[in-house]
Image (cartoon, rainbow, N blue to C red; front, side):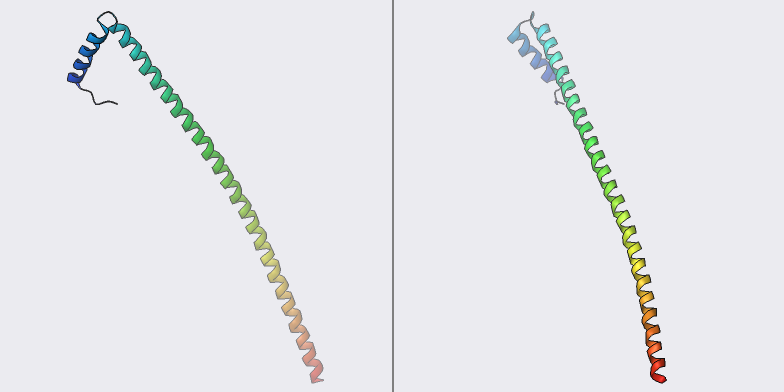
Length: 110
């Protein structure tokens, strides 16, 4: 976390000893240790909460995308069915027109 070496730690300890005194220094160190521990725990809780919310959000997005994909596939099937029906109708109409043309040509020949 911090790039503090042994010489820096000695200087900090001496300054703390002079500022607080030898009787209060252990209490101060204990309180500082507890404070850092609580801070780490709080940060971990926040991190876990953010990760959980992110997972839930991505899960909801994934479900929505999956649902849209299914709808598109269904609509694509409907479009394919309509296309086939139109092709059949066009073929039937073309046959009917050809037959009518043939009938008219036969009547003209007579």
